[in-house]
Image (cartoon, rainbow, N blue to C red; front, top):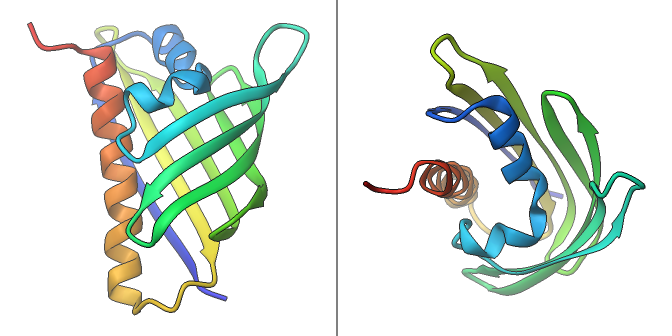
Length: 146
């Protein structure tokens, strides 16, 4: 079963608390992640943080629907896939680091498991593109054009 992985980081001109609040607002992901077409939090913890959410995402082979379970830390958020249509598994993590001057380094690490019969170089391009689009969308969300 193919497994694809990508990791990238980006520096944003926003404080860690602001970045953390943005990534934890998983229901807003369709507004800043181009491939996410639907996002619905289906379970939250007692403080309001998402524990489980359902998604629809546009892919080259059709719409994928999946559910993710979340864990939270003071410097990030991680998730694992509970169920999916095209994917057989997904693990991801955002790790945040305070930078001098008030910015934040965001590291996004994503692993996707699936059974799609695609050549490795295409799968690699796709997952790297997903990570890049997500971080570009996050940066734009946090640093709107002047």
